[in-house]
Length: 261
Picture 1 (tube, rainbow, N blue to C red):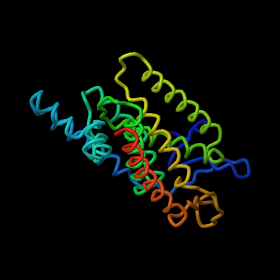
Picture 2 (cartoon, rainbow, N blue to C red):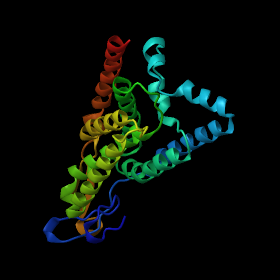
Picture 3 (cartoon, helix red, strand yellow):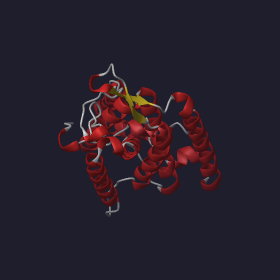
Picture 4 (cartoon, rainbow, N blue to C red):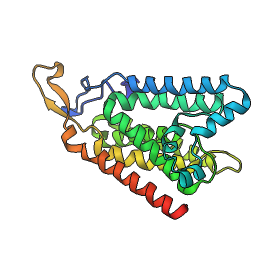
């Protein structure tokens, strides 16, 4: 993304000090996990399509979110594995494109560990919401992607002082995009798991709110422009959050089983 017109850029955000705009570099990483997840879901999709129609359906049912198998047979792994399955080419294309767009930005800014935590724990939150509110078989990475999407929104909101009007514009665009997606899920026969999407949004928001990087501009006469950006939300401040969140998920699954089974 270009910096022109105050558009947020993960590598070169504007600095408002002294009413001047200078270019400074964020401490970002290469989004290798995003590419790895894209490769995994593509490989699984290709494998499923290499099977006969019946075998492909059975393969999906072996790993999909199927409420009865989770509630009555203890196959809790399905809450995780369903995130890597896709029904058809259109399904994987839209999910893959969304992950490519938002996943790269979030992983670059949050780092590998925080990105993985949001994707996995946010995705499981989405699956749990689907378990609680949807009886249908459910597959797809969209719940985890909505968690990543939500995390990007949290990042922009928390750093709006760095990005200026560009952050507000993008937040507005993301809000409209989320409402459109939720709206499509309300259409009759949409086959969209809105519960998973909303669960992913909520899970990603909660996690990102606490583990999101907190970039601060500090004076540094050695750096070009005399400033640098430092992430002051160090791991020792946020490492307990995903542990508590994961414990909450386990407790929620146990509660769901006790109520629904």
